[in-house]
Length: 557
Image 1 (cartoon, one colour):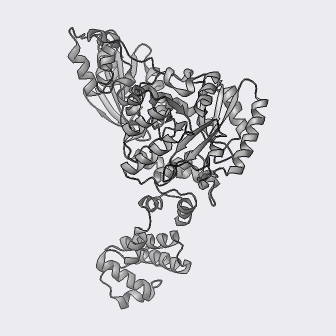
Image 2 (cartoon, helix red, strand yellow):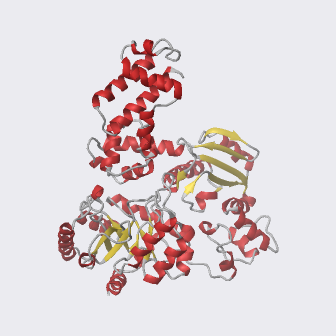
Image 3 (spheres, helix red, strand yellow):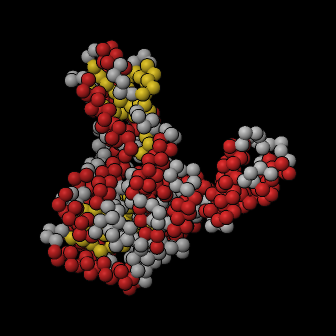
């Protein structure tokens, strides 16, 4: 075993000991030994115990550990500590800029056990409130995690959007008359993007191709016959197809829908258009109403297109209010008044639903019963003060292990509406998780089921649930399901929107904002809701202030 490998193992042992708050003198001696071994001018392997203990900074105890490491490839003490540490916490210790002491704070004080949860905390500005952290450290950690996420070749839609905008400007600046559109996953509004596909149509295909090829807009270019592959500065794969203008819409259609969808449309085409003047014409030739790009996944909407029954997809302008948001009363950055004024004056919304964390969320300054009552006094005061706007009294109530909510009924009934969410014990089996959610759904005070699976895209899988049973329970108990608009969540998954709508369940596009900028995430909520086929008539926060007030009153009765 090389000296560097031995030093790395010793360093990990010292970090784990610091993480578990074991003898600081022992931690220091092991860390020092790791440094010394790494710098030795000779190999440690092959040395006897007697020779090892004479090395400066090693001594008898550490010589024994090195012998154990050389003989077995590991150390019992290290293995025991690893077994007592969540794998995600061990992974955090590899992040540049945070040592074991900071990881200990993240784990023990904030209850964060994975890189994904840490990234989410950075995005919610939660890390700056922890001891030993500041805004600069938080930003550095977020950048390191984003770099690691990008190395997997997968990106959140929200990460790709600015890259796509930049690419659009660059290509359009080269050509005044060329056609240009994105295709593939990005045009279908997929939540995870592995490749950004661009279609360019030009009267002079060869000149356009050469212009783009020599423009330098992509790194590590590979030039093919009529397309080129490269990547952006952050490692996003980009493929640009350059075709003659007459083939633009045919190519755009072929490269947008997934294979199943494209084949289903082409199979229905009686007279296939070789050079269609629009995508609408392609669908017309197949006897179908035009299907929006975001709906081109498989056959889900083919039959509806045949019967001219496609939904009028929801748009951002349909939203009248923002539900499920956090203020300085719990782990938010802005005051209630600041959030209300931003929604009213900047976003032109009619209402705000405040849902600070409940008392079980100690890590997020969850509200005790006394503080709930104090907050509601402030809301009453603000509602008298704010003209043409209303703040609804809500709470994000933790769903406990047994499915109950974490306030007594006499407190629950004081809220206008309640978002019930799981935040703890996420390692449940499907049956347990499903039972837990259904019990919460059956609570007469539950208005909305928050982020139903607790997933964090690219970083933490949600707990497995029986979607049909959970959605059926929401239908039976008149409970709305949240489409959490945070681009790391976008949960409920769009693949289950149609099942929910078919069962009569309403959805709500909730920003889960922890600061005023977080309200802008409703943009991503609308995107994923459109992909799921949501229309405004079944979206809770597309209701006017008067309409939603009546909905909340009826639910409470």
